Image 1 (cartoon, rainbow, N blue to C red):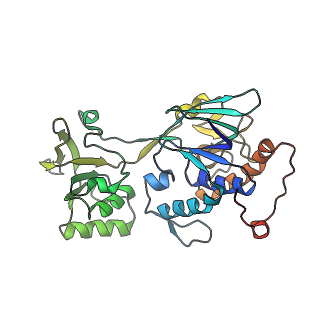
Image 2 (cartoon, rainbow, N blue to C red):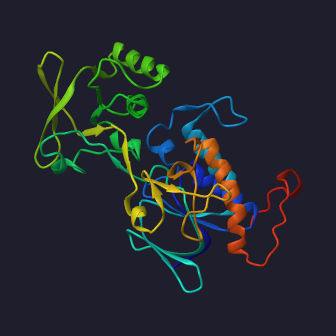
Image 3 (cartoon, helix red, strand yellow):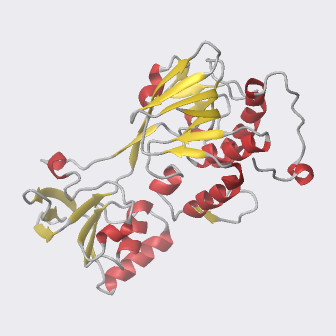
Length: 334
């Protein structure tokens, strides 16, 4: 049993910043996320994408922002349960919450904060016969450890930032690397697009545009990927791994069953403190909705700050909140 003041569901940038604001008020946090790493979309979808609206940073790469947030919250010693999804939230007699996850982890907290971005993520999968047969037998939808692909024959499919970024990284690791995209142009940032095309010009990768995945071969593991080009000619590519990077599809998942007021698949909150219709449960970041809502990391940071001021009254009932600027009080770790 994990005991904490605040249980934060979602370890994306807004959830991580909430740890900092809670720490300033001497509240401990435990974070739960369905993804295997912290950072949410910033880590899994576009770690090398530049973000331009973080104060004090003319631009910062998404992955670097996650690193800085982790550095910022380190003094407050948050704990994490990753690669597991919250399944149940039960209010106990004393008003605290018992949170249960898909792997059996249990966490007791005085406050629950939902910072789950757009909800649980599932990979968007190509429409291929027998695809499920090869999942974890050569077909993977996320890259966790690039070293797995060293010296291997790899086919990446996709045309966004994630596909481009991983192509640039794996080009130096894989023995053969092919990037397949169904359109003639990429959707990613121009700099990455230019670098990928330059790799293809140098012969370091194979680039197949206006092409689609049509068949997988091998027994019992993946051995080849069949790709059909714009002229309907089929090409059989030897492959140890196929990595379709078509993005992640968001869904609310179990959140929809927790008795919280929803509107168009988002959680309705009171902008006074970003509380939900269930007392003691808050929602911050892209998961919530209210008049004038903007889905920006910057706005999520603001929401996290006000939420923590309100949560303090539940975590420390009867204790007066003495708010001071960090320039006065500094950072006081536990």
